[in-house]
Amino acid sequence: MSDPVSIPANPAPFPLDPGGFALVIIDMQRDFLEPGGFGESLGNDVGQLRRTIQPLRAVLDATRALGLPVVHTREGHLPDLSDCPPSKLNRGLPSRRIGDPGPNGRILIRGEYGHDIIDELAPVAGEAVVDKPGKGAFYGTGFGDLLVAAGVSQLVVTGVTTEVCVHTTVREANDRGYDCLVLEDCVGSYFPEFQAAGLAMIAAQGGIFGWTATSADYLKALS
Ligand code: TIU
Image 1 (cartoon, rainbow, N blue to C red):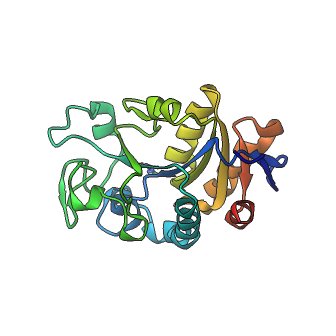
Image 2 (image 1 turned 90 degrees about the vertical axis):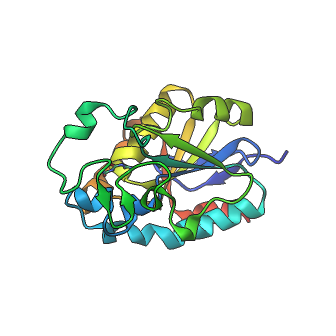
């Protein structure tokens, strides 16, 4: 096992342990990134998130090439909605609600086309896919057990959206003792001001939730 590699990061260099981390890719699903899905039903411009795809693809390729653990997550619900609390179903004024039919199938329902991960980042054999009913990856899933079994203590976190599922997961992970490095250009928000604030909040106060760095610096560390 090789020594930790120092990655330039905020608020301080991150000591990436090549044998002790997993790449986590949060919710890069058609429902959030393509028209007709849950993200658009909430009134969002889904085009805002697409800039994450290319850098994330490079990060995924490099991580895969080294055989390091990759975990994908997907937010969604069972077809009978038994795992969707009424508060989530009824909140706000989406034009289509969770479970309603849309151009990519039923909105945010497991097994539907729109619920799956975009083609550019589709999981390959050996990569874990965690289906989660909430915003955080730990709630109601086997994510925690999976990380323990993988023997990792660091998470390199990517995906969408920065201030919702990425933040919730990073906060949950931080409380469970994981060191999280969030890749700035591989996370996206529908709101530019939330992107900036979301990243700043992670690294503020000496890294209250973790670290942030660019994908270029992560790729350099792997090379
Ligand atoms: N609405 C929004 O910004 N995000 C979500 O509902 N889920 C995720 O962030 N995956």
